[in-house]
Amino acid sequence: MSIRHLKTLVAIADKGSFVEAADSVFITQAAVSMQMKSLEEALGMPLFDRTRRPPVLNAAGLALIPKAREITRSYQQIMDTSALTKKLAGHLMVGSVPTMLTGVLPAALVSLRRSLPQLHVTVSSGLSTALVTQVERGSIDAAVISQPPVDHPGLIWSAFDKEPLIVIAPMSSPDELPETLLQTHPFIRFDRSAWVGMMIETYLTEQGIFVKDIMELNSLEAVRTMVYHGLGVSVIPHRVIWYPDVLPVKRLSFTRRAPERVLGVIEREDNPKKHLTEVLLEELANSANKPLGDI
Image (cartoon, rainbow, N blue to C red; front, side, top):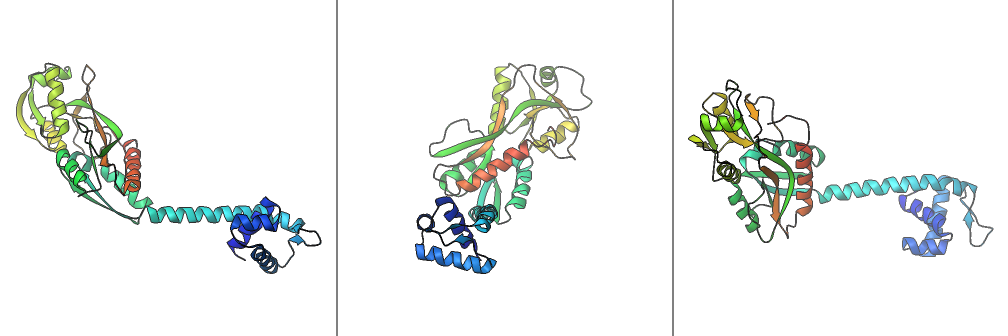
């Protein structure tokens, strides 16, 4: 007995005759007859009343149909899953800005490794502008970055979450408005060559908030460490995911609505691995929405 025989049996039940069943499963009527005889021999009982023309299912045959449907349906689901697994195998080259490498990306990669062990992901780090250039040239398949300030023809941008700008200050700092803290304390600035650094500078300028820069760093972890040690205050994105060992600092929302850093994936419109980047994007969204913390 084979799945093919059961599929033919179900086709006979659906179509009402050997002739029409043969057309639906793309074999000859003679082949249908042979398959049904083999099935009956394997089961050790007749499934058709052959005294009638054309033969019709008898009581045993009719009783077998629901189970045959269930078996063939389960078999098809297994085959579909197998085909999907093969499709989602291979090598995906991903670029990422450093803030994603210490944020949402690791959690997404762990989830991908569990669900798709045949998918190999390699990750490189860089600033957003350089990563976009690599995507354009095809050096990498996609990049996990914040939303580009301008459109890039030939590239597709897909967002998965947002991070509003907030003020961070030492735990010992006075209970004052975040805008006051920024203007009365030394300011630790996030790298202005990064897009989020440009966003921070633009917002502070638009709001008329004048800060006293003492350092400019290209790592959110470094910024937070300096703030923790009481060296100043800063503005950073309110991160969608954090890890248990982060240093404690005050997290303060601006009194006016602050801009948001939009997180997403950028890739070429003709990316042949789009089916893989779609899976990555889904895992990034899922990881960002897990209740792991605040910043």
